[in-house]
Image 1 (cartoon, helix red, strand yellow):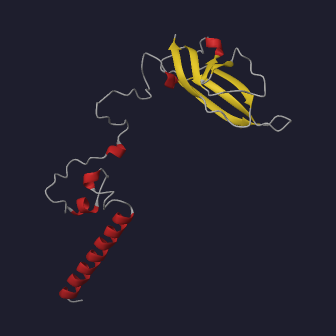
Image 2 (cartoon, rainbow, N blue to C red):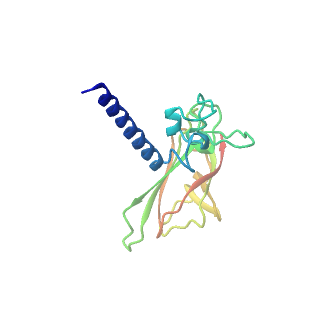
Image 3 (tube, rainbow, N blue to C red):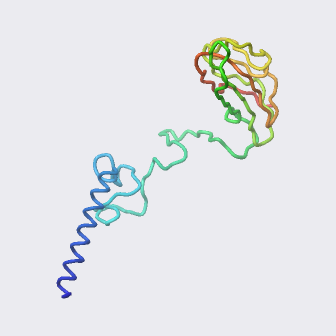
Amino acid sequence: MEPNRVNILIVTVTVFLLFSLGVLASLTGFVGGSGGAGSGTLLSLSLLLGLEGGTNNTLLYTPHRKLLPHSATDERIEPNRIWGDNCTKSDIVISQASTAPLPNGIPTYRVEISNMCVSGCDISAIHLRCGWFSSARLINPKLFKRLRYNDCLVNNGKPVINGGTVSFQYANTYLYPLSVSSVVCV
């Protein structure tokens, strides 16, 4: 091939690849009104090509990649920690699963409330948000009872030891969403 034809072929392939990258970038949201380096996306086609005029491309603003949410007041939000001296309500893990229905067909669910504190703490006075929790199957009130709307007490307020689990079954037409509202570290 002649040198001119090789150059034309290289330019044609390069233009085709750049056009394909541009189409791909606009389809995936890297370029346009909802994307671009200035709006917080990881990369943009113009950044890849060095076409971003008048900007310093050494630091990309990528809020969707942060582990903790950024607040305007810079309040500290305690993450689920791996190490620490104190327990928090995030150390209580609630699991629910469907089990075999009652003979009359009412669905049943098994609940496990576990103390997963990594610093070896026992946790007492575990209160859950539980709505109007009720069950067609009797639950031992020493394990779990509704005190009032959206306030259920676990283990009669007594400590759940580190690594311990309180479990029970309930029967209702639907699964109740349960979440920890407060705990006391022992």
